[in-house]
Amino acid sequence: MPSQPLFAHAAKAALATSLLAIGLAGAAHAQNLPGKGVSVQPLKSSLAEEVFQTLLVARALERLGYDVKPMKDLEPATEHLAIANGDATFMATHWNLLHADFYKNSGGDTKLYRKGVYSGNAAQGYLIDRKTAERYQITNLAQLKDPQLAKLFDTDGDGKADLTGCNPGWGCELAIERHLKAYQLDSAITHRQGSYAALIADTIARFKQGQPVLYYTWTPYWVSAVLRPGTDVVWLEVPDSPTAAAQDDTRLPNGKNYGFKVNQQHIVANKAFADQNPAAARLFEVMQLPVADINAQNLRMSRGENKASDVARHTDGWIRAHQKTFDGWIAQALAAAQ
Image (cartoon, rainbow, N blue to C red; front, side, top):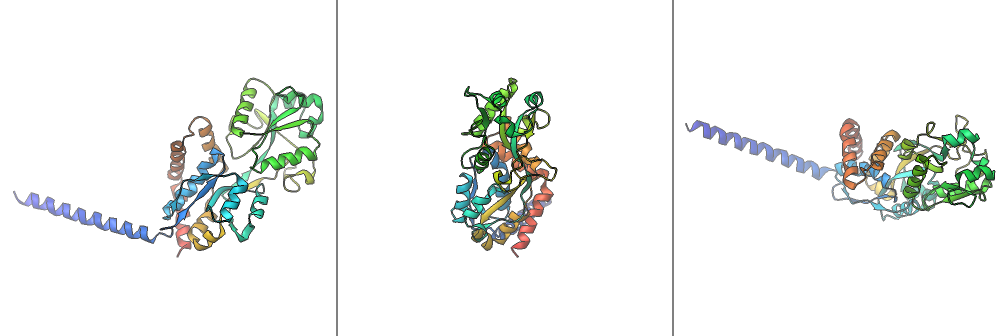
């Protein structure tokens, strides 16, 4: 019967027309996106665990139509300068207060844009294994002036405690050096620097062998999910000496003093770019990522899911699990472009 083929033909034609209309609408929408034709260059440090939060920002920028280039690695001081000079667009891991001098020395608010808090409650400080802390009643870094206590953490036989420290150029190494000098611990503690990933892996291996460990770390990062504060390790306080701290008095509201104030992580962008791209500027301001989510993703990396494809999968999975939040960021950014 001829009616069936004709009906099918008509249905196909209608479907094709509908798909064309949808395609044209999508193309028109893409043309109207605020980032259309604008390239963005993200930066991160040499720390692989910074990819996740940086890629999340990149995904949001892509939704706004921006052409996001592959992220490049620079150390924090150089990151800030590159962004201020317009050689890059943004970084997602600016620590305030730790990177305050980098921000100021790169031109501050006249050249850089920093609004909103991307991730709060970033802590850092010194830890030792709980077994040694309890056996020798060690609660304060300054106790390592005692040669007998310092020797407990000696890994190379020179009689000095070996502290797994911070990579040159990260900013935390300067605070550690100030502490060691101010607390007169230079002759008691060796600040071990190099590749933090390699140094902390050795530290964890020694802990698992039952040996005493002394190290610096921070959150968000995966180390505290492996060496658990309060269970496996304990934080060490430092003497109350504001002049020795990274940023004035570091005593916390709970009365503890670990040598560092709690930091906030911000997205920092080029000021001229932010002025010219209100949608991106608003996005940078409203995005928020819980520390616990960064810790969880970083832990997956430490357990072997550390390839670029793994981190991309983690990022896309986070977006799907928080789609309403992610879409809310995009909506606020689009509204700012009107």
